[in-house]
Image (tube, rainbow, N blue to C red):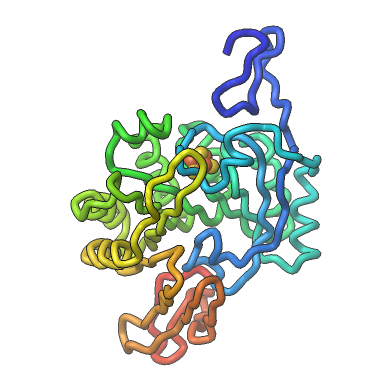
Length: 308
Ligand code: SF4
């Protein structure tokens, strides 16, 4: 960054040779969401999360669904003290605070401060990110994070670099780092017609995730025309077909942005449906907590890959 200019993310600036954060603590949105909306399906199912959005992003996805806050810094913002996130979440009866909507990692300093306050209040931290973040920032964030949903936008490094301005290897490394750090990880791919929707590409992404754990939940979401992209929306049958491809490697694959999606979860041992989902509404009454706090099927007692 030359003196007087900002970085690509627009929220870091060189002011007379000193790096400054003109948008530190400036939030564009604060709302209570179902945790399923992040999407996180295997982390505190049925709970609410206090969702905090910012401005700016380190990528420039031409199909960004939140481009009004991610691709500029003109959106109205308000100042939020990092410690206030915890008290707001407690008042709103939320089990967690999610850093989401635009890209939170470009505000890592504020997010790390807020995460410390949220942990101290006994609540969980959730990061929803494009995963383009390297150590030591990634390590500092993950040390305070309980669950993360990471976009895996493509298996094509050239597409990442050319169209999005990011790096596939950095995203893969962040997913692996989060998993290795014991953070609950779910991954999401927005299915882009003609770009990342071949069975081979979805299979390659599923294989990478399954290499970390076949229990890692994977969301395939239908794209809708947005921002600079006018390509037709993803056909629902395409998402369903690709989800079946991913299920050859992963046990928990969900389809998103579809009118008819149900995404129920049957117990792998007895077959009883222990979580029922319709859109963001969820009935997790078929899950019970074991003596060590672990999630179990209420019908047969089988341990299941959920964090309660
Ligand atoms: S990484 Fe997310 S917020 Fe940033 S431009 Fe891409 S879709 Fe938008």
